[in-house]
Image (cartoon, rainbow over all chains, first blue to last red; front, side, top):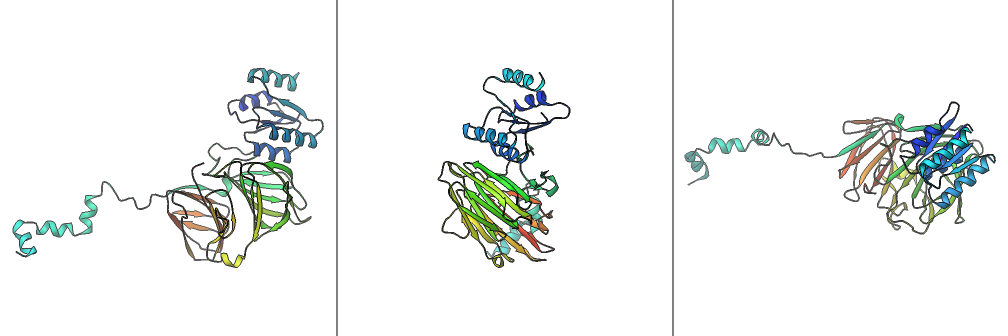
Length: 96
Length: 275
């Protein structure tokens, strides 16, 4: 889990998730708009894709498919509920 | 009674004389100078752009894009993206979606191969322009059309005037001689006008200005802003010197004039400022 991309349009949420994901040796990228997320997914092989907030079903699905195509071992996390619940989910996924 | 006799009698001669002089006029209005140049500018130095080197892709982002994020550099009016890309031979961007964006690609060197979900396929080179109205949604890929030579291009995204339009694609070749020391229109909102057209009240021009020349541009639509990008060379706009890949955004102006010291290749984008 070296390279993590966190996507979403909720600016107050992303930094919080970034802090959670930040650890030595990890590269944590953030994308606040769909175009940036798509560009990063195309350019980089990710270890973890964190979909927070979402850009709509079509774009989110494209991001997941493209990221999985580049790395079949990709770990995927998608926020569906409140931020605090998701933060715990993310912490578990990354650290437990 | 003649005018000078009346003035002499009424003691107004000196005042009339004084009022006729520019110095007194200026003195009267010194506290509220005439604002003859209300143009506002924003300078974007080439080195202030976001940069990423992904090996096969070297890219410079004028506005926040991909891994570059600066809240002060999100867009200039309806101009959302200005990417300066160098794509290595044979490499490129696989199929990806777009919607509700006007996307203009200007190759600077090499060849760029395009394929999209509407069945369009083609290669564009320097001297050509490609435009795509993503509208309700389009998928496309962009690859360097040459296996060895790098391809350099500018990719520009504008917010559209209207959303959910039918997607469309077009490309057009231009006679580069027609931009020598004059504005060559390459894009407009009008299908019947010169250049390609988009769903936005925007006009793009290219110019190859010779050394020591001066060129003036007048807005097509009052209220629009101007974004002047130096592709090669250098230019001077009022007090602002611009070098290669620098840009100057201008608002509250009816137009502007630039001068050159050396040969300069530049792109001028006239765009609405209200998103």
